[in-house]
Image (cartoon, rainbow, N blue to C red; front, side, top):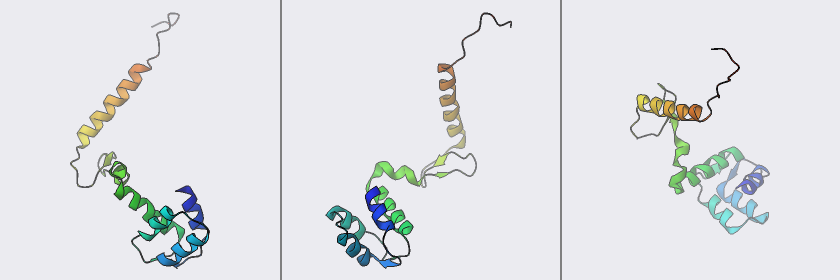
Length: 117
């Protein structure tokens, strides 16, 4: 993916999807890379950033384990919220508190016998 993004940065924009494929093929890009660019949704791109956004979005759509990328912060509690899924601010805060408590319990400061209470 990094090689593809670096190659896209070197291309001239604006460019059609077909021009991107031709230019990448001329640089010796692999068939798998060309297929990924060919599957992009837009016909024309104004920048490498636009292309990379669509590539990442396509990759996330094709891999359900990456869907968490689309999580957005809840406006009320700030914890991640998946669109279309139930969300409870209270439950999220409780989960965070439990996690924080388990970490602090694990790293409690030992009592210093020389210290006066």
